[in-house]
Image 1 (cartoon, rainbow, N blue to C red):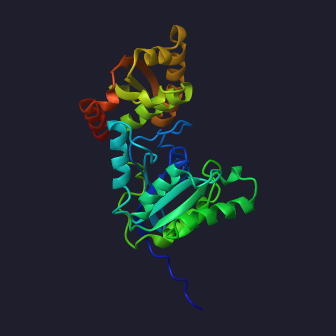
Image 2: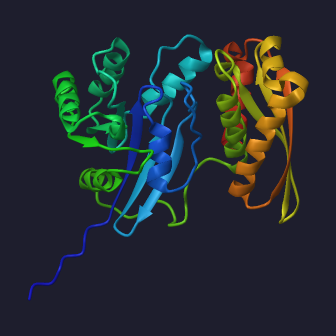
Image 3: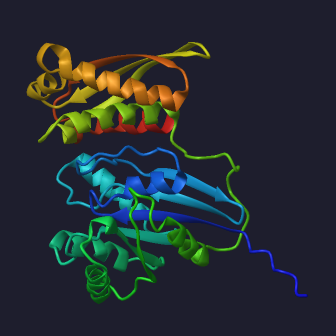
Length: 308
Protein backbone atom coordinates (compact mmCIF):
# COMPACT_ATOMS: atom_id res chain seq x y z
CA UNK A 1 0.00 0.00 0.00
CA UNK A 2 1.47 3.35 -1.03
CA UNK A 3 2.32 5.74 1.75
CA UNK A 4 0.69 9.17 1.66
CA UNK A 5 3.11 11.98 0.90
CA UNK A 6 3.17 14.67 3.55
CA UNK A 7 2.25 18.08 2.08
CA UNK A 8 5.19 20.41 1.65
CA UNK A 9 5.43 23.32 4.05
CA UNK A 10 5.08 26.70 2.36
CA UNK A 11 5.53 30.27 3.55
CA UNK A 12 5.11 33.59 1.79
CA UNK A 13 3.98 37.21 1.75
CA UNK A 14 0.60 38.14 0.26
CA UNK A 15 -0.49 41.75 -0.28
CA UNK A 16 -4.21 42.56 -0.27
CA UNK A 17 -4.91 45.42 -2.69
CA UNK A 18 -8.00 47.16 -3.98
CA UNK A 19 -10.11 50.27 -4.12
CA UNK A 20 -11.52 51.82 -0.91
CA UNK A 21 -14.45 49.88 0.59
CA UNK A 22 -13.70 46.68 -1.33
CA UNK A 23 -13.52 44.84 2.00
CA UNK A 24 -9.77 44.33 2.40
CA UNK A 25 -9.70 44.71 6.19
CA UNK A 26 -12.80 42.56 6.59
CA UNK A 27 -11.05 39.86 4.57
CA UNK A 28 -7.88 40.06 6.66
CA UNK A 29 -9.85 39.75 9.90
CA UNK A 30 -11.88 36.85 8.51
CA UNK A 31 -8.79 34.95 7.36
CA UNK A 32 -7.11 35.33 10.75
CA UNK A 33 -10.22 34.82 12.84
CA UNK A 34 -9.18 37.87 14.85
CA UNK A 35 -9.88 41.58 14.52
CA UNK A 36 -6.58 43.38 13.91
CA UNK A 37 -7.78 45.90 11.30
CA UNK A 38 -10.60 48.35 11.92
CA UNK A 39 -13.63 48.27 9.65
CA UNK A 40 -16.00 51.08 8.65
CA UNK A 41 -18.09 52.06 5.67
CA UNK A 42 -16.01 55.21 5.10
CA UNK A 43 -13.33 55.30 2.37
CA UNK A 44 -9.66 55.21 3.41
CA UNK A 45 -10.37 53.53 6.75
CA UNK A 46 -7.03 51.70 6.51
CA UNK A 47 -4.17 54.20 6.51
CA UNK A 48 -1.10 52.03 6.89
CA UNK A 49 0.04 48.55 5.90
CA UNK A 50 -1.09 46.07 8.55
CA UNK A 51 0.54 42.66 8.71
CA UNK A 52 -1.46 39.63 9.77
CA UNK A 53 -0.01 36.12 10.01
CA UNK A 54 -2.02 32.94 9.51
CA UNK A 55 -0.14 29.85 10.67
CA UNK A 56 -1.50 26.44 9.72
CA UNK A 57 0.08 22.97 9.84
CA UNK A 58 1.44 23.09 6.29
CA UNK A 59 1.81 26.82 5.71
CA UNK A 60 2.38 30.28 7.08
CA UNK A 61 0.62 33.01 5.12
CA UNK A 62 1.78 36.54 5.87
CA UNK A 63 -0.92 38.95 4.71
CA UNK A 64 -0.45 42.69 4.27
CA UNK A 65 -3.62 44.78 4.34
CA UNK A 66 -3.03 48.02 2.43
CA UNK A 67 -4.77 51.41 2.15
CA UNK A 68 -7.34 51.65 -0.63
CA UNK A 69 -5.95 52.70 -3.99
CA UNK A 70 -7.11 56.28 -4.49
CA UNK A 71 -6.16 59.63 -5.99
CA UNK A 72 -3.64 61.44 -3.80
CA UNK A 73 -4.88 64.93 -2.94
CA UNK A 74 -2.56 65.79 -0.04
CA UNK A 75 0.73 64.76 1.55
CA UNK A 76 -0.95 62.22 3.84
CA UNK A 77 -2.68 60.51 0.89
CA UNK A 78 0.54 60.47 -1.11
CA UNK A 79 2.28 58.72 1.78
CA UNK A 80 -0.51 56.14 1.90
CA UNK A 81 -0.23 55.47 -1.82
CA UNK A 82 3.54 55.10 -1.51
CA UNK A 83 2.92 52.31 1.00
CA UNK A 84 0.59 50.63 -1.48
CA UNK A 85 3.19 50.77 -4.28
CA UNK A 86 5.81 49.30 -1.96
CA UNK A 87 3.43 46.43 -1.20
CA UNK A 88 3.19 45.34 -4.83
CA UNK A 89 6.72 44.20 -5.53
CA UNK A 90 8.94 41.79 -3.58
CA UNK A 91 5.87 39.78 -2.58
CA UNK A 92 4.95 36.21 -3.42
CA UNK A 93 1.35 36.93 -4.36
CA UNK A 94 -1.12 39.80 -4.80
CA UNK A 95 -4.82 39.55 -3.98
CA UNK A 96 -6.66 42.26 -5.89
CA UNK A 97 -10.00 42.56 -4.13
CA UNK A 98 -13.08 44.00 -5.84
CA UNK A 99 -16.69 44.61 -4.91
CA UNK A 100 -18.47 42.11 -7.14
CA UNK A 101 -21.64 44.22 -7.10
CA UNK A 102 -19.92 47.10 -8.92
CA UNK A 103 -19.09 47.33 -12.61
CA UNK A 104 -15.35 47.12 -13.34
CA UNK A 105 -15.25 49.70 -16.13
CA UNK A 106 -15.04 52.75 -13.85
CA UNK A 107 -11.95 54.90 -14.38
CA UNK A 108 -10.87 54.51 -10.73
CA UNK A 109 -10.99 50.70 -10.93
CA UNK A 110 -9.16 50.60 -14.25
CA UNK A 111 -6.40 52.86 -12.90
CA UNK A 112 -6.08 50.69 -9.79
CA UNK A 113 -5.77 47.53 -11.90
CA UNK A 114 -2.98 49.25 -13.82
CA UNK A 115 -0.94 49.04 -10.61
CA UNK A 116 -1.35 45.24 -10.66
CA UNK A 117 -0.53 45.10 -14.37
CA UNK A 118 2.74 46.93 -13.78
CA UNK A 119 3.95 44.27 -11.34
CA UNK A 120 5.59 40.96 -12.14
CA UNK A 121 4.15 39.44 -8.94
CA UNK A 122 1.44 36.79 -9.57
CA UNK A 123 -2.02 38.16 -8.84
CA UNK A 124 -5.49 36.76 -8.08
CA UNK A 125 -8.73 38.60 -8.67
CA UNK A 126 -10.82 38.10 -5.53
CA UNK A 127 -14.48 39.00 -6.04
CA UNK A 128 -15.92 39.99 -2.69
CA UNK A 129 -19.53 40.51 -1.55
CA UNK A 130 -20.91 37.71 -3.72
CA UNK A 131 -23.68 37.28 -1.14
CA UNK A 132 -25.16 40.52 -2.54
CA UNK A 133 -25.21 39.38 -6.17
CA UNK A 134 -28.58 38.61 -7.71
CA UNK A 135 -27.44 35.50 -9.58
CA UNK A 136 -24.53 33.22 -10.47
CA UNK A 137 -24.87 34.46 -14.05
CA UNK A 138 -23.95 37.97 -12.89
CA UNK A 139 -20.89 36.58 -11.07
CA UNK A 140 -19.73 34.84 -14.27
CA UNK A 141 -20.32 38.08 -16.16
CA UNK A 142 -18.14 39.98 -13.66
CA UNK A 143 -15.33 37.43 -14.00
CA UNK A 144 -15.44 37.75 -17.78
CA UNK A 145 -15.38 41.55 -17.54
CA UNK A 146 -12.29 41.56 -15.32
CA UNK A 147 -10.62 38.90 -17.45
CA UNK A 148 -11.05 41.18 -20.46
CA UNK A 149 -9.39 44.03 -18.54
CA UNK A 150 -6.43 41.95 -17.34
CA UNK A 151 -5.77 38.47 -18.66
CA UNK A 152 -2.82 38.13 -16.30
CA UNK A 153 -4.88 37.24 -13.22
CA UNK A 154 -3.83 33.71 -12.23
CA UNK A 155 -7.04 32.84 -10.41
CA UNK A 156 -10.55 34.25 -10.07
CA UNK A 157 -11.86 33.55 -6.57
CA UNK A 158 -15.39 34.52 -5.43
CA UNK A 159 -15.87 35.11 -1.71
CA UNK A 160 -17.96 36.86 0.90
CA UNK A 161 -15.53 38.14 3.52
CA UNK A 162 -18.24 39.28 5.90
CA UNK A 163 -19.85 35.82 5.85
CA UNK A 164 -16.49 33.96 5.68
CA UNK A 165 -17.75 32.21 2.57
CA UNK A 166 -15.18 30.90 0.09
CA UNK A 167 -12.18 31.48 2.34
CA UNK A 168 -11.09 27.83 2.39
CA UNK A 169 -10.99 27.84 -1.40
CA UNK A 170 -9.01 31.08 -1.36
CA UNK A 171 -6.46 29.62 1.06
CA UNK A 172 -6.08 26.49 -1.07
CA UNK A 173 -5.42 28.64 -4.12
CA UNK A 174 -2.91 30.78 -2.24
CA UNK A 175 -1.06 27.68 -1.00
CA UNK A 176 -0.41 26.57 -4.59
CA UNK A 177 1.46 29.78 -5.38
CA UNK A 178 3.58 30.12 -2.24
CA UNK A 179 7.22 29.04 -2.21
CA UNK A 180 8.35 26.10 -0.13
CA UNK A 181 10.03 27.02 3.11
CA UNK A 182 9.83 27.04 6.89
CA UNK A 183 7.70 29.43 8.92
CA UNK A 184 9.22 32.85 9.53
CA UNK A 185 7.25 33.68 12.68
CA UNK A 186 6.33 31.70 15.79
CA UNK A 187 3.02 29.86 15.61
CA UNK A 188 1.30 32.27 18.03
CA UNK A 189 2.48 35.43 16.23
CA UNK A 190 -0.47 37.37 14.83
CA UNK A 191 0.52 40.90 13.78
CA UNK A 192 3.34 43.42 13.70
CA UNK A 193 1.14 46.22 15.03
CA UNK A 194 1.81 47.32 18.64
CA UNK A 195 -1.05 47.24 21.13
CA UNK A 196 -1.10 51.03 21.42
CA UNK A 197 -1.49 51.49 17.68
CA UNK A 198 -4.38 49.00 17.60
CA UNK A 199 -6.08 50.73 20.53
CA UNK A 200 -5.78 54.09 18.78
CA UNK A 201 -7.30 52.51 15.69
CA UNK A 202 -10.25 51.18 17.71
CA UNK A 203 -10.95 54.72 18.91
CA UNK A 204 -10.74 56.02 15.33
CA UNK A 205 -13.09 53.27 14.15
CA UNK A 206 -15.78 54.45 16.56
CA UNK A 207 -15.35 58.03 15.32
CA UNK A 208 -15.69 56.88 11.71
CA UNK A 209 -18.92 55.09 12.53
CA UNK A 210 -20.36 58.03 14.48
CA UNK A 211 -19.54 60.92 12.13
CA UNK A 212 -20.23 61.89 8.55
CA UNK A 213 -19.02 64.00 5.62
CA UNK A 214 -15.45 65.36 5.85
CA UNK A 215 -14.78 64.58 9.52
CA UNK A 216 -13.52 60.94 9.12
CA UNK A 217 -10.71 61.93 6.75
CA UNK A 218 -9.56 64.68 9.09
CA UNK A 219 -9.19 62.53 12.23
CA UNK A 220 -5.97 61.18 13.76
CA UNK A 221 -5.72 59.46 17.14
CA UNK A 222 -2.55 59.36 19.20
CA UNK A 223 -2.11 57.57 22.53
CA UNK A 224 -0.67 59.95 25.15
CA UNK A 225 -0.68 57.81 28.28
CA UNK A 226 -0.67 54.07 28.90
CA UNK A 227 -0.45 52.81 32.48
CA UNK A 228 -1.07 49.35 33.88
CA UNK A 229 -1.15 49.59 37.67
CA UNK A 230 -2.23 45.95 37.78
CA UNK A 231 -2.91 42.97 35.52
CA UNK A 232 -6.61 43.80 35.73
CA UNK A 233 -6.55 47.51 34.88
CA UNK A 234 -5.17 49.65 32.03
CA UNK A 235 -5.39 53.45 32.09
CA UNK A 236 -5.29 55.05 28.65
CA UNK A 237 -5.41 58.68 27.55
CA UNK A 238 -5.69 59.53 23.87
CA UNK A 239 -5.95 62.72 21.84
CA UNK A 240 -8.21 62.96 18.81
CA UNK A 241 -6.77 65.47 16.32
CA UNK A 242 -8.91 67.27 13.75
CA UNK A 243 -8.17 70.08 11.29
CA UNK A 244 -11.01 72.52 12.02
CA UNK A 245 -12.80 73.85 15.10
CA UNK A 246 -16.10 72.86 13.52
CA UNK A 247 -14.93 69.26 13.32
CA UNK A 248 -13.97 69.38 16.99
CA UNK A 249 -17.47 70.54 17.86
CA UNK A 250 -18.99 67.69 15.83
CA UNK A 251 -16.90 65.02 17.56
CA UNK A 252 -17.62 66.38 21.03
CA UNK A 253 -21.32 66.71 20.24
CA UNK A 254 -24.03 68.51 22.13
CA UNK A 255 -23.20 68.39 25.82
CA UNK A 256 -20.31 66.03 25.03
CA UNK A 257 -22.71 63.23 24.08
CA UNK A 258 -21.00 62.04 20.90
CA UNK A 259 -17.54 61.94 22.47
CA UNK A 260 -19.00 60.01 25.40
CA UNK A 261 -20.57 57.52 22.97
CA UNK A 262 -17.28 57.11 21.11
CA UNK A 263 -15.44 56.54 24.38
CA UNK A 264 -17.94 54.00 25.67
CA UNK A 265 -17.97 51.97 22.45
CA UNK A 266 -14.18 52.10 22.12
CA UNK A 267 -13.63 51.10 25.75
CA UNK A 268 -15.76 47.98 25.32
CA UNK A 269 -13.71 46.79 22.35
CA UNK A 270 -10.41 47.72 24.02
CA UNK A 271 -11.35 45.72 27.12
CA UNK A 272 -12.02 42.67 24.93
CA UNK A 273 -8.75 43.21 23.08
CA UNK A 274 -6.57 43.72 26.19
CA UNK A 275 -8.57 41.40 28.48
CA UNK A 276 -8.43 43.98 31.29
CA UNK A 277 -10.65 46.64 32.78
CA UNK A 278 -9.95 49.90 30.92
CA UNK A 279 -10.17 53.51 32.08
CA UNK A 280 -10.20 55.60 28.89
CA UNK A 281 -9.83 59.37 28.63
CA UNK A 282 -10.35 61.10 25.30
CA UNK A 283 -9.40 64.67 24.38
CA UNK A 284 -10.06 66.54 21.15
CA UNK A 285 -7.60 69.08 19.74
CA UNK A 286 -7.40 71.13 16.55
CA UNK A 287 -4.24 70.84 14.50
CA UNK A 288 -4.89 72.77 11.33
CA UNK A 289 -4.12 71.01 8.06
CA UNK A 290 -2.26 68.18 9.79
CA UNK A 291 -2.55 66.06 6.63
CA UNK A 292 -0.13 68.49 4.97
CA UNK A 293 2.19 68.77 8.00
CA UNK A 294 5.35 66.63 7.54
CA UNK A 295 6.36 67.04 11.19
CA UNK A 296 3.01 65.76 12.49
CA UNK A 297 2.89 62.92 9.95
CA UNK A 298 6.39 61.87 10.99
CA UNK A 299 5.22 61.82 14.61
CA UNK A 300 2.29 59.58 13.67
CA UNK A 301 4.62 57.21 11.81
CA UNK A 302 7.14 57.20 14.68
CA UNK A 303 4.56 56.44 17.33
CA UNK A 304 2.96 53.73 15.21
CA UNK A 305 6.34 52.09 14.59
CA UNK A 306 7.42 52.14 18.24
CA UNK A 307 4.00 51.66 19.77
CA UNK A 308 4.16 54.94 21.70
